[in-house]
Amino acid sequence: MAAALIGNIMISNIRTSISTTTATGATGATGQTGPSITSSSTANYVLTTQPVGSLIWLPSPQVVTAATRPTVPYVGQMIYETDTKVFLQYLPSLGLGTGGWVLPFAQCVGRVQTAALTITMTVSSIPQYGTGLHFKGRIRSTRTSNFSNTGCRFQLNGNTTSVYSGQINPSGTFLTQPFGYLGQFPAEGVPSAPAGEFGPYEAYIPNYSSSNSIVAINTTGGGFSGGTPIIVCNIYAPTAPTTVTSVTVLDDNGSNLAIGSTLEVWIEM
Image 1 (cartoon, rainbow, N blue to C red):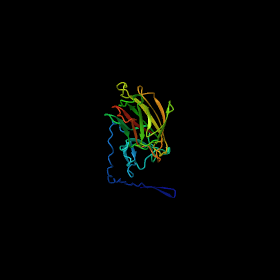
Image 2: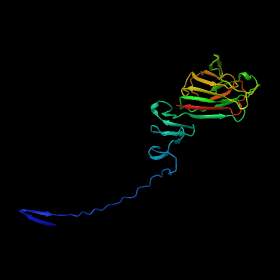
Image 3: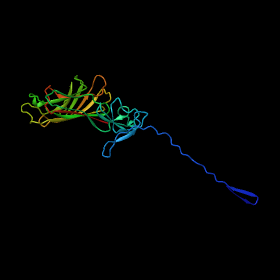
Image 4: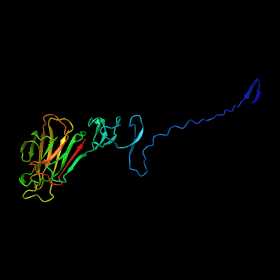
């Protein structure tokens, strides 16, 4: 300490040294190890709070089932359901789908290709997330009689009663039958269609996942050797409103479908 007298005032210069000690706390617990991602990996991960109460990295799209979807999804989140075999995206503002989960793009939810002679092709348990349904494929009948009228048909939800009606274009013929009409296709009668020739068909059902008392179905089909290609405006009028959960395609006289005939079901937002 140093002091000086200036006039009647004593001024002191006091310096104080303060010693500071830094203490180190206990080491915290090691956090959960995240997924291993190498620089060559193409996997995409997102930071999410699923399950609730945690903060972890998960693959995107997240792989779940219909029963284990994220309970607090974020807008735009994508998942893949292993039981329904569809990709879904959480977009609640659209007002579509189930609980805000919608189809981000059209997806094939079932395909059949005959490996042996068979009378019917069916895709069932169709997921109810979309608004539009397409079923399409190719057909060749093995019938050996009535070759000039090789009609093929479809049925929905396994319904075999006369609740189907159709207006055939360009002929203008009106039908009420226990099936919807697809058109005429190549067959193996006399004379037979060339070996390997199949006829294509396609059908569209709007709003298939809502319960409807009248379901509209537009179909087009036919084959070069099976008759004139046609467009049919069909309706399906079940006794009670219903969604569409299965599609069956078959020959209209019960003949087998040739090996290589196909049925695909696609659904879209």
